Length: 154
Image (cartoon, rainbow, N blue to C red; front, side, top):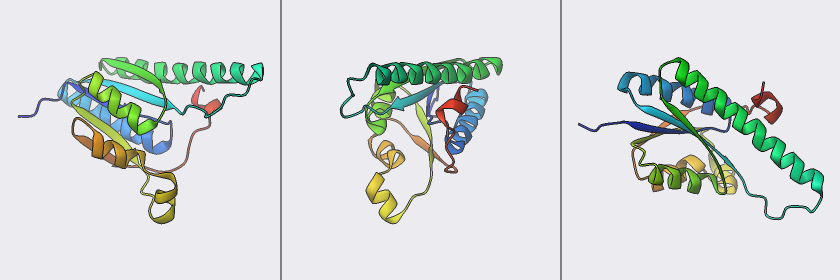
């Protein structure tokens, strides 16, 4: 029997990723598994030299850490051991790298079902994770509405 002890759930705080988080927490509860959440902040190609921009990036990171910590507290309240990762770079690459390094047994990730030109133009993080993951991936079909960064901290 395949033993699931560590689950990784990527989030972008969209409704869909929060649905995947809910499914992952249900699975973690039933299996007694640890659940880690990961947010990948894209790296800007060239950071402006304006100090205000650097301050805004730090503010965003603080907001993201706060929101991830809230998710972990929610897990702890349910009796689930949780960890949070805030990474920088290519979303799919960082999710796969983290899954490998942390020896995850399962990834639970949302998909938004983009097709045609939208998928070709933007690529699919979920598709790349499914193809490259070192472990099984459970894909949850989610909705597309994103929570703004200001709302994520609320």
